[in-house]
Length: 219
Image 1 (cartoon, rainbow, N blue to C red):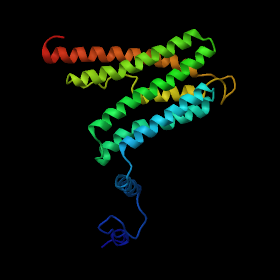
Image 2 (cartoon, rainbow, N blue to C red; image 1 turned 120 degrees about the horizontal axis):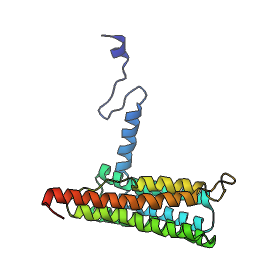
Image 3 (cartoon, rainbow, N blue to C red; image 1 turned 90 degrees about the vertical axis):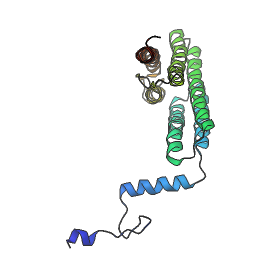
Image 4 (cartoon, rainbow, N blue to C red; image 1 turned 60 degrees about the vertical axis):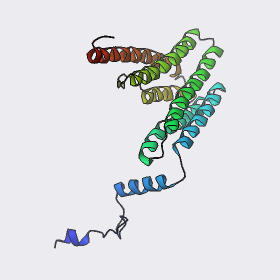
């Protein structure tokens, strides 16, 4: 028997042994402990929703860096609840419905606070772009939901929820020169989001049309 085999840590039936745990074993152990806890996907969804409300209040008060951090944390919860639901087996149909609903409301609340800021600055173009971003974001989500109701998978497009979160987070953290003097990326971030959400909506409309045409012969 080689030295490598003799020196290998012995593992008990629960996966533990005398040697240090590997990164995979640590992740597995943490996942198992999380699943065994009383934490539910709905609790994560509500926590994310509360985080986004806090972000909106901070943005309304022009505390953009803190608002951006709260938005990032809230959005992480928003995106983690679905994965945790599948991983833990604790998910329910109502939980999935609640998750989707709170995601849309959270995004709308934060963007409303951004629109209010631009309105205070009398920046009509940025205000209009923010409203267009709200419409586009809802349209991106709606087109996917409606397509899936028709039996068509519709995950195509650039402006997914994760992409929108990243763009808006950058815009908030680097808004109004609060973090870096003379650097304001909030309006550019909104312009990019407006363009991408409208483009993604068109992508999904055309995708669903093609899928239905190929499956049913006509739209």
